[in-house]
Length: 141
Image 1 (cartoon, helix red, strand yellow):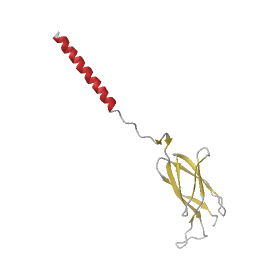
Image 2 (spheres, rainbow, N blue to C red):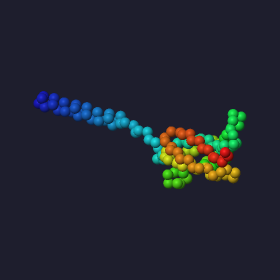
Image 3 (cartoon, rainbow, N blue to C red):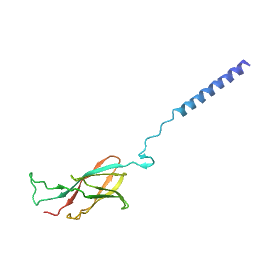
Image 4 (cartoon, rainbow, N blue to C red):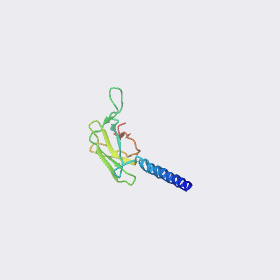
């Protein structure tokens, strides 16, 4: 009888240890890994830069810059399907900034009175802020 009691005690101890280990494993479960989304939405990244126009003179030198900032110019970011993902205006100093989801975009400068037709520029936005400068060709040579 003593032998059976010892065996039963050993089995009970082993079960308690196993149950305790399983409980500890559940309590110390790995926390979820951070994701690149906020409230179920894919996080956005800042794309910024400066828009300039030039050349502004036929010859450039140290006293006369070749390019000038373009103020109040509309910039559109088109996604890979051609849809407008973001629109912004440049500041008085030609600077712009917009929030975009990571991906491939075509930046389109929407023409304003007095400027030539600018070209489109393509940019890849990853998961870190990016600076991307744009230039409008004045046609002066």
